[in-house]
Every structure is written in structure tokens, then in C-alpha cells.
Image (cartoon, rainbow, N blue to C red):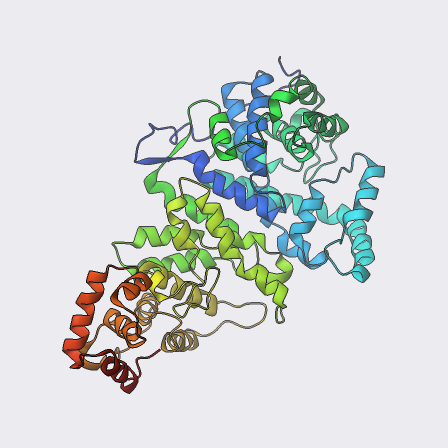
Length: 531
């Protein structure tokens, strides 16, 4: 079937460089971008893997519409990342509409201004549902008053962010244009430009149908997806593509609720899978970092600053690994409303719980994506502390390797030296003192703190002499032995072998002159080594 008014064609994503042979020197681009799609799901208040499902449906629809392989590939990637601009206006949406930009985005995706009666009904029923009851009427009135003026501006912000990020992650101009048309409508009532009909990029028109179909889909009832797209035929959606969908809706939504959705999406990618050279993975991670940091004006550049410090502090051997983990450590931030991140006063206990979960979402996003899964555990340790009272997993010293300790110190220093809505930025000296205080209190690693401060340009502080020449690891073993733990228990706590513990203890006894647990315990107390 041929489209009666086909728009301009553009090349497939990465056709110039990313399509290389599948070997260990490259990663599959769709796998890497799956992480971004999962983050956009969180930022839009949608179920995880919604964007993956949209990419599947878009690829299938494009094939049934007899589009070229390049157009089918672009439709796949546009659908995968069509919500990439969700962070562009998050701060303003939260400030204007009751603090929860995520809940607003979730509602916005379901509103249809092409059906005024339903639009008004949905606004009255859903707008401000996230706010206290007394505030809801005011939010509804404000939305209706400001939407005509603010929506085009917000749409333009999303357009600029979407097209820029799409280009940076290795996608073609056609995909960049497609995601920029994410909020346009076939009837010309969309934003930011009010494009009409074939003036909207064809991959975007395909992705629009896929999005509505997925949001309308109900497990076991493919006709629900058809009803959803039919209701928007000629308004939001291209009538020709809706008609194509009507003839194959069972095929479009087949398997969306079964098995591994990511595997299904990768299988649906048209043509030869696009791949990214491994040495370009850090550049992609930087684009994802900027996406996460754009969530709030208070965090702009935070992830890249953290990555610079952490990579310099950890040294050449692990610098690349730590840099990528540091760039990705705040992807989970998009799961928390800006009304929390941008709050100038103390957080409530419920708000704190949402903040404490954002590293969990970072780990879930990265672990779900094969190309980035190896960074997941490390990236999620930025708020862990040696004494076990950090979050989200409450890990203790023995479970935190050098890279994790450096990441935590780098993240803390980068945050301290930047302003936050509830405090001004610390001076470099104040931040150094605070960071060293955290190390003295046993929360951060002294070695990691000094390495980060050295990377930040602080003059080196002469390290305190450890009694009897004990090393940091020997002191950790001493503390645990003093508490009566066996070699096997110490080994489990420090994630080392019992033989290694025995080796360290031999050095401890030799250096301290003690030979019993009680003697070692007394030595630890005498020298202030018990914490």
C-alpha cells in the first residue's frame, strides 16, 4: 500500500558509521537506547517498556504500510524515543501545576484536544489529581488559562531537546526531525508549530499511531487498541495509517504482554541492526547524562562533573568504567517529580522515600539493557555509605569496592559545590572540610575522598599516620576481628577469601604485637580504630 502524500525521506539512523559488523568492538545501538527509552517512560509516568512496545508496533505498522527500509527504521527509532523531550519543561510544569510533572505528563499523553467534550471531561477528572483536594480546582483553572500560551513553548522546548539528543546518540537527521514532531497532530492542532498532514515527518506519523495503539491496548483485547486509534483518525492521527492499522491490529499488538519485550523490540528492528563502536559508548553515556541532568535547573552538568572527578580520582586502570557509571548514575532521577527535587524546604518522609528510590531505578534501567548492564551495580552506589546507612541498598564497607567509594565521594563533592534550592553552593574549602568530616565519621572512604579532592585541585593533605603502619584493609579486618567474627565471617563481610583474611590478620598481629581477640580489641580502642 502506498501513502497518497508521502513526506520527505531521510536516511536510516547511523547509516554512515554505526552499521558495522557485530563484534566485541561494538554494541547494538537499540540496546543502548533502550536505557533512554526506559528513563523516558519513568519521566512520562508510563509503565516501564511502554516505549519499547511502541517501537515494536511502529516497525510492524511501517512494514504493513509498505514503507521503505529507511522509513521503517526511522519509524522504529522515533517511536522508541518519541518521549525523549519529557525533561525539557519538567521544572516549569511542576511549578505551574501542583508539583508533580510526571503525573501531569501521564495525563497529557491521554488528552485529545481534537475532541473538545472528552478533552474537558478528562481535564476536569484528572488535572491536579496529584495535589491536595483544595488545590485541584485552582490547578484546573490555571491549566485552562495558560495552556494556549504555554503549550507551544513547552512543545518547542521538547522539540529542541529531542532533536538534539537524537542526533547526539547517533541517529539520523530523519529520526531527529521525527522526534521533534512528537507533539504535532495531523489536523494542525499540535505543538509547537501546528504542522498539518504530510508536513509532519512520516516516521512521526507512524509513531503517533503506535503510541495511541499501545496506550489504548488492553491484554486479550486487541480491539481496544483499534478503538483508540480510530477515535483519533483525522484529528491526531494520519487517516491512511489508521486504516492500515485497522487491517492488521491483531498483528500489531501480538505478543506485547508476553515474555521479554526488549528481545521482541530488538527482533522488530528493521534492516541490519545499527551498532555503535565501543569507544563511542562514553559519548552516548554523556548524552544520557545530560538528559538526566536537564530534569532540574539545579542539576545541570552534575553528572559530567561527577564523571570527571571520579575518572581522575580512580586512575587510568578503571577510569573508563567509572566515567560511564558516573555519567549514568542519575538516570533514575527522572522518576522523581520536580516538586521534590526543586523544593526549597525540608522534604517529608514520603518525599524522602521517593528520593531514596532513584538509585534503584538507575540500576533497574541499566540492568535491563545488555549494552549497559555491566555498569548497573556500580552506577547505583553513589549514595551508599561505608557505615551502611546510605541508600538504596544499605551496603556496608565490605560490599563497596574502590570504584564505588570514589563514585560516592565524587558525587558528594560535585553536589556540595553546586547550589541547591534549599542551600547555596559550598565553597571549595567548605566542601573539602565537609567531605573529610564524612570520612572521619566513617561514612566515606578516606582514600577515595583524598583522591577526589586531589582531582578537584585541592592541595594534598598529609595523611594521618596509621598506628604501627597498619593499612586501611588491615584496620577493617582488625575492627571485625575485635568484634569476635571468625575468619570466614570476616571474609564474607569484606567479600574476600578466608585465606586473604588470615594473611591480613597475620600482619595485624605482627605489627601490633597482640595475639588474641581481646588484645586486638583493646589495641583498636586505644588507637581510636573502632569506627
